[in-house]
Amino acid sequence: MPFSNQAPSPVPVAEAPDADHCEVFSPDAEALARARARAVDEATAQALADTFRVLGDPTRVRILDAVADGELCVCDLAALVGQSESSVSHHLRLLRTMRLVRARRDGRMVYYSLDDDHITGLLAQGREHVQEARR
Amino acid sequence: MPFSNQAPSPVPVAEAPDADHCEVFSPDAEALARARARAVDEATAQALADTFRVLGDPTRVRILDAVADGELCVCDLAALVGQSESSVSHHLRLLRTMRLVRARRDGRMVYYSLDDDHITGLLAQGREHVQEARR
Image (cartoon, rainbow over all chains, first blue to last red; front, side):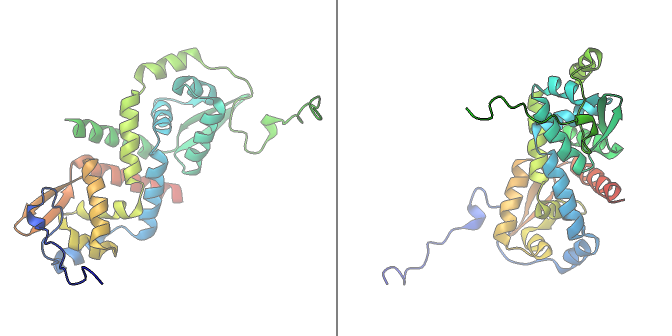
């Protein structure tokens, strides 16, 4: 087998410009125990990730942002984001499944609003992070 | 062309159990103007969606949650989430790109912490939403 005796060229990790990990494997038992004790459980981490993933679409962000200020119907939302009612309905169904919006029927119209106050908080914190990251 | 003269069966939208849109197309000009005036711009909506999408992974949620309480190194994080250092490094690179975590080198170790306070807020609001949605 050619080359089998050749050692790989050593890569000086510490000097690599994008070195992003420790040079030694040395987990800190105390920090780890502390982190483990207060860590989010796996089911909650998954539920959080599912929620964030649904928010990870610019049209859905615009829909949520729009209804944060007062309820709107699918027609209004379609006109606002410049997409078909059918496309907006699809997004709204996903948002309802994740309990991000709620629907209210009023005669022949259906109005959408945020499902709870934490969605407003999520959008506000997200927006402040984005503004900070741009600086 | 067979069937071309057959009209599709009428579907009574109002009576459909999952009717989620208005029976008439009637955007509310006033509500729309108000929503347009304060709507998030497209670039911000995209940046928000990009941020949320990166958060849409349970391992990345667990990493962020862990470093929210104090800085940790890749070794600690790998032990905590039960993944290889290389896999955790990959997640951390993405989180750094989105300015969600920052790295600090201390001798032979590299420690990670949250990049700004809004990430803590994002996680907290997300967690409260998830708890509320479970009720």
